[in-house]
View 1 (spheres, rainbow, N blue to C red):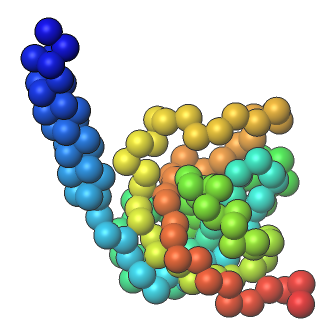
View 2: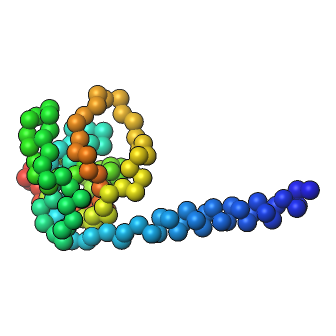
View 3: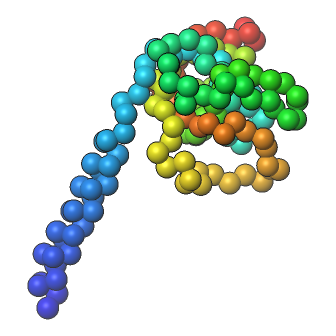
Length: 141
């Protein structure tokens, strides 16, 4: 009995894994050569990036204007970094400029990536995934 179920279950597993891999590979490859500045980082993965230059003509990758309600500071052309764990590995500080690959809006934007023991913080509604982060300069040096 177990031997008769093994083959169908193995095939079903392989179909599911293949379908998941195909779905992930269908996302856009990203836009390389984008320059940004880290403008806000109040902690716990709340990283806000301002686009400075690069081949980003699509207005859906960043908000034209966003105001931080805690500091009453307004920023233009910003988005929230969705893959915050990967982003924090670049060791950037507020004010640092850097190049990166912009992978666009997160295809799983409704997924909860983390929980923090801090109060809710006003963040830009646009979120993007960034990779290949290379620091250019820092005002702290």
